[in-house]
Length: 205
Image 1 (cartoon, rainbow, N blue to C red):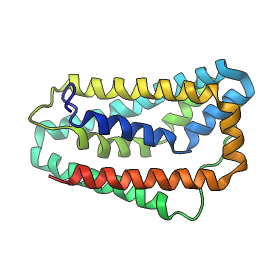
Image 2: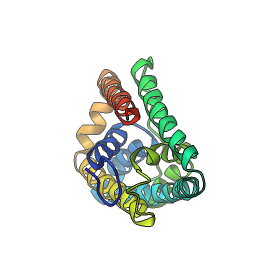
Image 3: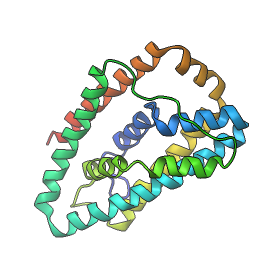
């Protein structure tokens, strides 16, 4: 299903959810903020994560848009490279010996600002978006800025709903993640399998 020029919109949304579910600095910033300041602090951290993510996202969009306009063949190569990158991330999650994400320090104030900088100071996110976006762009149906804006808004809305739901259940989630490393490891492996599957599906003609 193509929506606003986003090919395979359903897979695009599921992929976003899979990445959100992976324990990482943003997740722990959210959980720690909620544990220290309640739901309002978690909601503030959520908006910080979204704003930081949008900055990185649009930086990646600038590069993808330039590539799409100037080098169509190179863009096609990037699409296949992105599929391989997605599968590589999945394989790393599957075969990693233990969960890599660790809780981080959050001061009991300025939750939005701290979450924003935690997200912004992750340059790998730009590389990820540069590989991720081309997978869901068909040059024949692409609508330029409309498609990129739809991708950005979709990510922001899914992140908002997911993170606020996570805040609402933060006490339970925090306890489970800290007390059950096997659970966190199992979730990472499941996410890895999904990512490998996405990479194979998106690379197929």
